[in-house]
Amino acid sequence: MKKTRYDERHTLFSRIRLVKGTKEYSEFYTAHPHYQQKDDAIRQPEFHLNTRQDASFKTRVFPMTEALNPLLKSLHKTVETHPVSDNKITVGDAFSNTIKALTKLYGAHDVGIIKLKEDHYYTHKGFTGAMIGLSHYGETITPNYTHAVVFLIPMNFDYLKRSPHYETMLASLTTYHQIAQVGAQLAMYIKSIGYQAAFMSDQYYLAPMVPLAYDAGLGQIGMSNHLVHPVYGNAIRLGAVFTTLKLKPDAPIDFGLDAFCKRCALCLMNCPMQSIKPQKRIVNQRPFYRFDDQSCFEMFVNIGTDCGICLQSCPYSTQIDLKTQEAMRNDPEKIDQFLKSYLSKTGPKRRFSNKNPLLITKGGTDGNNA
Image (spheres, rainbow, N blue to C red):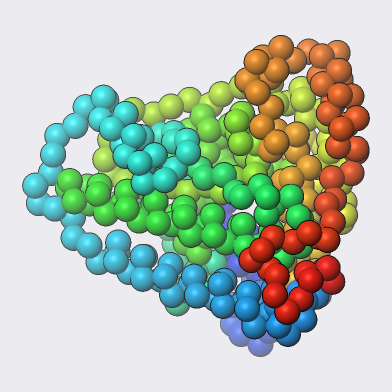
């Protein structure tokens, strides 16, 4: 089966940064006119400015997110300019466990390793690095690295369960920056022992993250097309460090998620934009579902924050214990029994109110008007 490489220019977060009247805009939509009309309707990269909160809230909370980009920019610059040591150490397969332990010491909650293939990489760079001053749109990506250390950090679920309120964006951004700090430290370490390394962040990618994490054995792909981890569900953010350091790769895992998603579909039922589709498709031998990225982002623009309803509506995000997972593994009857008990406690709709916002959003506004 022929494998295809993704192009980062096609990702929604790259497309919405195209500016009308520019050469890049004209060339992209001439080649791909089916995106243009709906993309133009949601072309608001700074969608958080639409948040339905009063001026006091914005004055206090916006600096928390705006202050993160200079930090991220400095991390990328520091790692990029850090020299690769001439004193290369020799390692064997057992060193993979050292790298995993070190990644967890830096702050990751789970780690996997893959041997990179050409189809893991994007073909070209998009506009995702614009917020930290990276100007590389359209550059060809050469697969120079041989292995990737892939890791995850769970999001703050107390914040996430308030989806789709502003706390969701705070949970998302702070976790992305924790990911960047872990990646930067690991990349610096690897360069210091004599190997090339680069870390991925929410502003810099060489490859799409979900296929990497799936191949590294960190979870399975759920109906919302997020990676679902057996302990943390899909309430997670993913990071990776690409390197020339040869490591022992892991393999994909199967904890029965495919059968569970078919019986559950709470992410689909809760999605306010009906962006999640039940039709399955296989992309490069990995299972994905059909998904409408434009209607999903329309929700972001309308409410001025990350949505996140699909993340917090997944039962795995509330941490189903491993014994229960094994008991219902690929057993439709036991899955239905679990869901019946689960829904009797939570109800089919998992849209929490924001009447009791977290302390960080209090002071000058009650946070109710999102």
